[in-house]
Image (cartoon, rainbow, N blue to C red; front, top):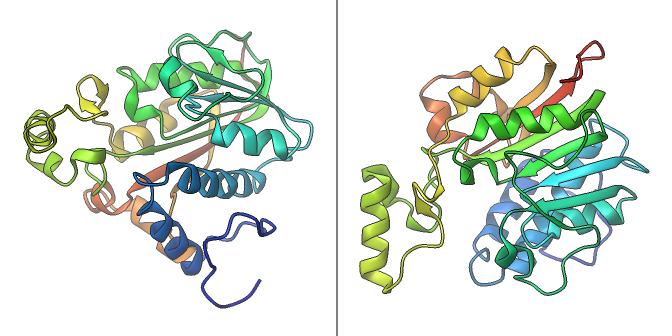
Amino acid sequence: MPTALPTLRLDDPAPRHKATLARSITLLRAFRKEQTDPVFFYTLLARDTVEQLSAYTDLDGATVIDVGAGAGFLARALQDAGTRCTPIDCDLREITAHGEPPRNTLAASALALPFRTSSADVCLSSNALEHVPDPWRMAEEMVRVVRPGGIVYISFTNWLSPWGGHETSPWHYLGGHRAARRYERRHGRPPKNRFGDGLYAVSVGDALAWAKSCREVEVLDAIPRYHPRWAEGVVRIPGLREIATWNLVLVLRKRPDARDA
């Protein structure tokens, strides 16, 4: 790979995933386009996610469930990588927000996944956990549908991160409901991600505690999604991690001796 800062091009061959500072800067630069050019940002993020996931498991021919898939950017990238990916989302408006959804798309709840126990090689979710009212039930469902030895990948924006309030940030630090009211006064419409109704406070500490308590899995990684490798230790510092992590990735492997529910 070149040592210069990568340019924001989507037609370049995807490099092997490396959590470098240059990669972090590239993603942060792209994030500025999230509202104005979501296709650009989410396509770039999907590619990066596939590269990151590939470090933990072979994706070629893998059966994958993408939970909270939205318009399907990640699902398309996974299908392009050779997986048999089934994307699901409960919001038909999100599914069709950018045209025809990817093949195999299902409208279903993340709290009751419509799949048999131990039926997938990989179950992943990118930036959906903070949008469900019972995040750990969703996480348990993801563990359930993965076969013993399979991978669960969960990424979410924690509430106290600078982007925890999504488009109402940084005013969410003064309270989620207050931030939503302020947004509506300024823009004449409620935010898409309204606190308590589609956006919920999920913490890094709670995620780590849930993963540790889940006897069916072993934790392979708990890292800040967008940080360079040398900054990953922030997740181990209580308090600071809630602000500095920005977005947590949990990578879990279902234990070979896990019992089917």
